[in-house]
Length: 474
Image 1 (cartoon, helix red, strand yellow):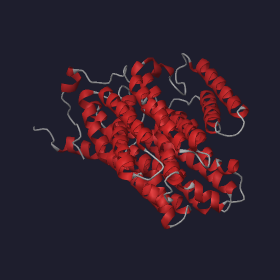
Image 2 (cartoon, helix red, strand yellow):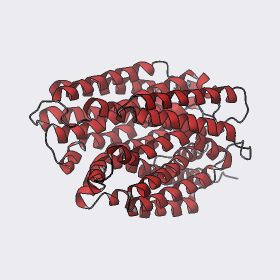
Image 3 (cartoon, one colour):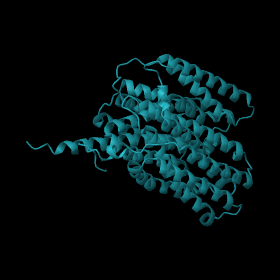
Image 4 (cartoon, helix red, strand yellow):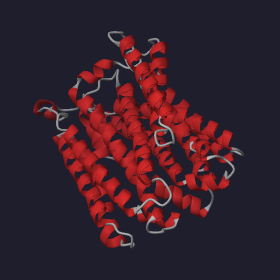
């Protein structure tokens, strides 16, 4: 009897259907996360009676909770079912987005942003775990590369997208647009996704560990995002308290089966150094985008809409480079891409530091930095995500992806604080922006150096091993 020829095709179709639905939801979350940066000035004008400290919580409430909940949410997805947690997170994110758009006052908006963060934290690691579970091991590098490319594009175009939406409508549409798209993704996910579970499914969650990990991560994130505020004592106290709570978690989790975070993950040198590099590049990535808008509007006098167009070429380069790099990583590993990308990012930021002046010169000064930077981001961001999960077993898909996403969020919070500290005040000088871009160049080189120990290349035997149902490219 001849084998059923439809089986590999059916597996491929299911895998790519899972990819499309999961990546669409993550695109929505990451687009919203960065688009809200562009809404800060309109929010300040709309809520003119609200203090700057209170208004900052429209960003900080989301950042703190999202970063704090990613790791325990990944663990819950592994234990309770990734499709189930994904659907819950997507429904909550869509509902909270509607609340944000409706919010009549700052208190409602901040509370709705906190709910958004909980929903986003639930669906983000669950989505990556669904993708990892849908593909055979030897095809995961390409799939994760594509998945990360979608995320990188969303994060990169978010500020420009937010600027365009606000220019055409109002800040409320930055949130409202999530509602119909989120509901459509939820319906498709409920109909077409297959439940993906860890072999440990049914085990009890480590609630004490989750509490210690969440509170510790939240305190650290709060200390980072408030580090640019006047007075250093509260942020330092929060950072210290967070580190103590995380240390307590480490003591609690050591040798404990079923801990909220399996600390043996970090015994793998590649996983450890990839996450260190992710934190550093997260700082550089967020500081770059925030400072771009501050520079274009503050030094060159661009309008918000024009600034959005001005930063578009970089993101447009990200997606084709990221797609190509994902395919290449499956053959040569992630390290070469990370090294080249880190160095190229350093060159792009050094170019900006040396070439920008007070007089607008978009084509000769700004555009080359955008194109170089977009190429670097397309190489680095997907490779970091892919390398972080390259060696994970099926019991760790959710929590491993959650760790890497959480580390990126902590880096992003630190990057925003860095940009605000160096160039965030009204009247920031050209020299301050040049200094910042010099710092970002150094962070690009540091990313490359941290990636030297990373080793994810498949062995020749594994690479040539036949696979019965390897999905074809979409």
